[in-house]
Image (cartoon, rainbow, N blue to C red; front, side, top):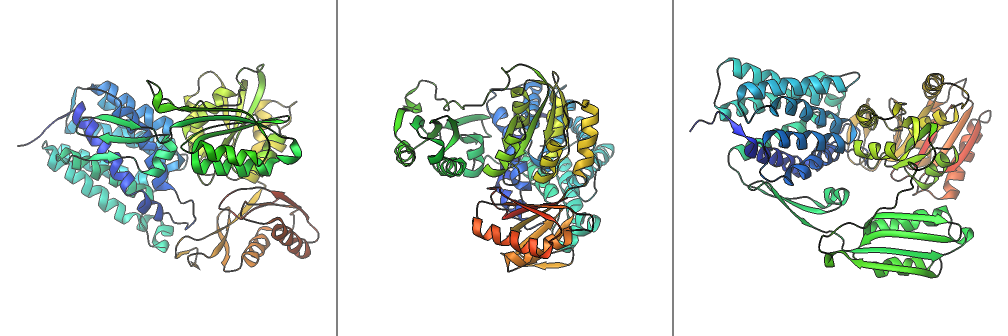
Amino acid sequence: MSVKTIDSAMLAKMFLSGAKSLENKKDYINELNVFPVPDGDTGTNMTLTIMSAAKDVSALENPDMKSLCKSMSSGSLRGARGNSGVILSQLLRGFTKVAKEYDEIDAAIISAGFDKAVESAYKAVMKPKEGTILTVAKAAAVKANSLFEDGVEDLDEYFRGIIEAAKVSLDNTPELLPVLKEAGVVDSGGAGLLEILNGAYDAFCGKEIVFTMDDDTAKVAGETRKFETASGKIESDLKYIYATDIIFSTVAKTFNLQHESDYKRYLENIGENVTIDVKDAEVAVSLVTNDPGLVLQKALKYGPLTKVSVNNLKNEETPTEAPVKVEKKANEPKKPVGFIAVSVGAGIAEVFKNLGVDYLIEGGQTMNPSTEDMLNAIDQVNAETIFILPNNKNIVMAANQARDMTEDKRVIVIPTKTVPQGISAVISYVSDSSVEENQDSMLAEISLVKTGQVTYAVRDTVIDGCEIHQDDYMGIGDKGILSNGKDIEAVTLEMVDKMVEDDSEIITIYYGEDIKEDDANKIKALIEEKHGDLEVELQAGGQPIYYYIISVE
């Protein structure tokens, strides 16, 4: 029997099924990233984005089209991570703007929704590139309109035609982006969008799927959630059941910044919602875990316990997560200007703190913060104007989206693409200058900073004519691969050589958590030996995955 319309219940099933289909292929989509770095995360970012909306959709009982569309749009907008996630959220925002006005939607309305989705997504990107998720989305919209104009009303035929057009477009992305062709992959964002369409079509065809959020997604979401598309309801089981709060005594010399970083990393492996607050001779720790005894044992290595509180959340009538302690800035006196920076690694965080940054968002390369993370940070900084430093090219769009969603404060995003650019931007700020003058000077300053980052390859590939093998070290510059090989010292030195120019003055080295201080000092000495006329500084960055982050100014 021909189906010509779908109601809100069917659209909810299709949306949840599309979300789960994307999650199932998350790792495959991550592997499509052109750069074979350990944090290739298109699949992860798109999954976390759509699952943020799936959580809201699944919580609805018998939603009408308007409330369903609101959950799809607001959930994805706030949960958007990375450029691919922001684009996906804009696609959903555009589609739901049209669909929300109707009780049932047909080919005509879906076609209009697809057009609005593509329009919204293209507007969100400053310099749209073809051969990306945008191209695949546009191909789907063009086909949707073509089928409607040809009189196709049967939605089964209609959806199959759209999906086929999206697949053809995806397969053609290497012809539009040479870097994809060289690497032998299709666009990862476009592949993610196709998976969503495939999953949605499965639900339309009557395929009933019980959804369980995988461990990686659940860790970020805070719970293990099960989605049932047949009912649209959600079952929720706490992943960790003991809310654990302790205080132990110490002194600065026996609990330094490195100890704090090590302890936090340990706690994050056995729980979540970890906060550590160091004040004078006391350290307060809060988290949810299944092993409170391990929390106490580790703490005793640093000092005697003075307070212990462990609550079983399952014993409460309404299970809740342990409260997250946030350093409140919103209650402080309002000031003219505040700063928010994305940071990763205890050492780099300390640099930003010492420069007067008001609020640090932990994230960066290994986990791109969401738009909601940005909005929460903005809420915590009590200032008339707030500068945001994303410090990663894949976070700039989420920062811009948070800026556009903020109404009560002026938010300015300085598009810093690396940590060294962010540090230079803060250093160049002059309190006596106007906001506009500071914005101009920060933009000028970050353009003078070159950044190189040393990491390892997760797979074999070819980029920029460089043949790269799995586990090779890579020196990645602002515009591509600068060096690669089996020896980390040689790769690092070659990368720096290609960054240094005649007018260069300062080289700053931030070494990561996997680098010993002696090895970092050796790299510093080798660079000084080769570039003796330049000032070379060494800092413990503590960042994961990237052995060295090096700036040349």
